[in-house]
Length: 71
Image 1 (cartoon, rainbow, N blue to C red):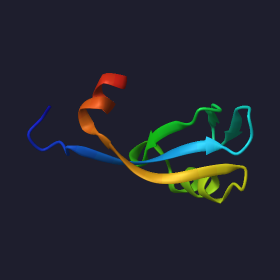
Image 2 (image 1 turned 90 degrees about the vertical axis):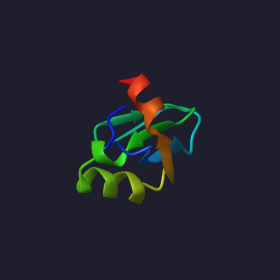
Image 3 (image 1 turned 180 degrees about the vertical axis):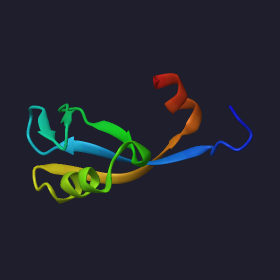
Image 4 (image 1 turned 135 degrees about the vertical axis):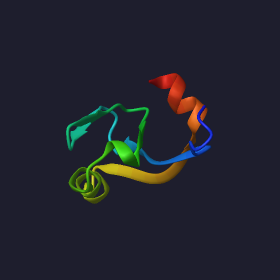
């Protein structure tokens, strides 16, 4: 990890309010939920996801080393 890299990354965790996956803003959210780093979203995408009544959205932070492992 680089010296200037943050230890945590701000993001959202999104879960559909129904039993099946749900698509919005170019993403497909599985029934078990999905995390996305805020840096990976445009302002328009974030707004569309947060304002979608069929999605539950929680602001979270992810450990930077876990995000690197997922890439």
